[in-house]
Image (cartoon, rainbow, N blue to C red; front, side):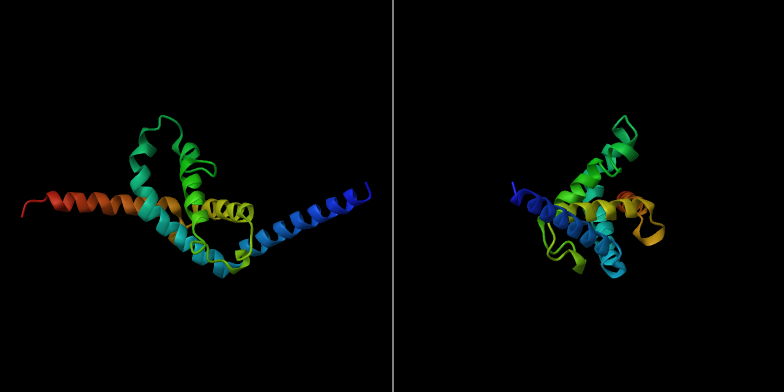
Length: 143
């Protein structure tokens, strides 16, 4: 039983190190900016096509069910970005665990929902929707 408290201390230290790593990543403005750009690109190029019509026809509050932190869109974003090491560019997460990366990606998602301007995920989705519908309308215009 003498080794048990030492193991608890190691687990506590690992948890503290993990939390600090995530804290550093979330405060690395350059890394967050790059990854927010990747998030918006993902929203425009991937999520839009998979979900734009589902968001309107879900029958529930789409902000919770689809766009919320635990919604379908966030789950897809986290899943896709965890599949490839190149998707997350923040240097603070180079040697991080899957759980740390997932926590960071959920942080990015929440930031994208709160952000104003360039990194706003709802705005990126809306812009993509407008561009697609404008392209469709243009293609049906008579020459």
